[in-house]
Image (cartoon, rainbow, N blue to C red; front, side, top):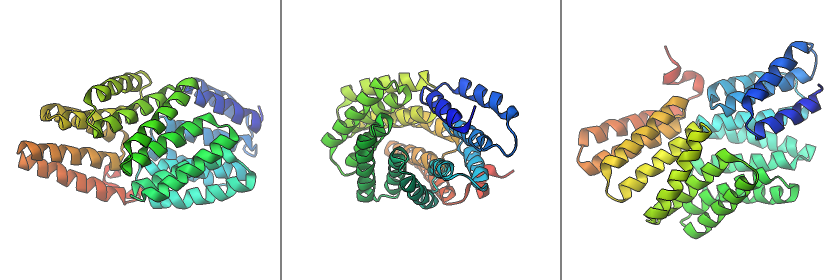
Length: 323
């Protein structure tokens, strides 16, 4: 199997979420390769991709950095930079992410790889969004959507629509947000992207919670939770639990809110995303405040602050990696 065949086969397997088959293929191919075979670099790349898909972002970051230390072909370097950026995103390293994605964007433009360019614009948009630069995020997501519609990448088109929905909600336009998320969900359902369909259902619910549409939101949350559990999407399930907490809280059911936020915190802690952990602690703090539990509120506020401080540190110096 040459590098082109490996690339095409692995992309097909990963898109279908056939992770065990993908791992078996790499285990079968690697022993037969000479150290100088370019195909070996692609094997290393896909091993790192599998780490990312399994939400082990610290391991993925290390693997992509090790790969990028080699003299890579331009196309492989562009893809590795993109995925290293994705790994850093979940660690809250948004400034470094943007730098890497800009290099990946230049290389992908030289290669004429519009699908990778669309993905990179989506990632750059999220980096802006995480830093409250909503207008910059909107521009990046719109760039991605135009590229997707030109290249025919339905998966990336759905992602761009999803991200536009998030940005519209940040701007207070719930109607546009719902429309974008529904359009994204339709594509994901048609393409058989089960995990992503669940994410879209959650995002629709999130908008409905902000509008006080409790019954409609609850149905979408239940459907999103079912899918997240079915496909073992830990982060997706954490979003569902977090939004369920907001749903409970919005209706004055504070005990239910605490239970949901605690579940979100446990899930987020299990994957080591300090940015998401901080959000969960802050939600718990505010709920305890509303209940008059001042000491608990202060405790979670301090935990949130600690997690936010950890976000700005490189992973290698973070508290959870010591001892």
